[in-house]
Length: 204
Image 1 (cartoon, one colour):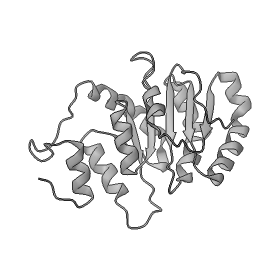
Image 2 (cartoon, one colour; image 1 turned 135 degrees about the vertical axis):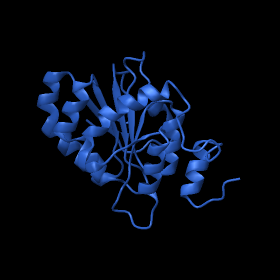
Image 3 (cartoon, helix red, strand yellow; image 1 turned 90 degrees about the horizontal axis):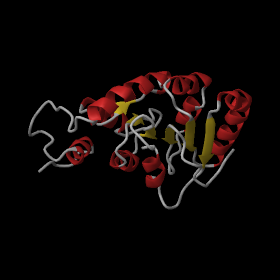
Image 4 (cartoon, helix red, strand yellow; image 1 turned 90 degrees about the vertical axis):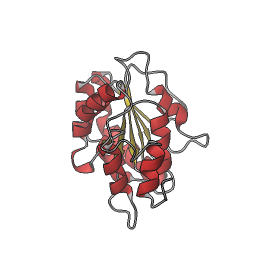
């Protein structure tokens, strides 16, 4: 089921990226759990598109999708994936917007700052899932503060299905952009200041 080419536009798509430099196979396994896919279907999703990373990720993807194939065929739900895209993921994220408000999907991403920025530029709801196995990183703190400022949904591997419902709340809030913040001047430059503060950079 691995396919480096973009599939035809789906009615409602969830795109997942686990990263390229430090693949997040825990996230890959979580989005290929039957319970997660069932919850996607419940709220109208028809496709799960996954950037699964390296050889280990491809093996997980192929094994899990093979196990799911028969059940998904009956439900008219597609799972497609690819390892890497040298041109970046912006087009994949943009296609999540769908053809209407009703078919707008979501992006689920590891908590790398570059992928978060790409996801936010796409203008669709973004779920950020930190990899807690990484040492000496700010992924959890970054996800927490971005969620607090209503930029993203903070997704947790232990209960990722809960993020699907939270996305719909974020979607409504996005239509009333910008999000409410605790201090009027604290993040006057928006996401740039949020991320700069988390990375320890000075905010002017």
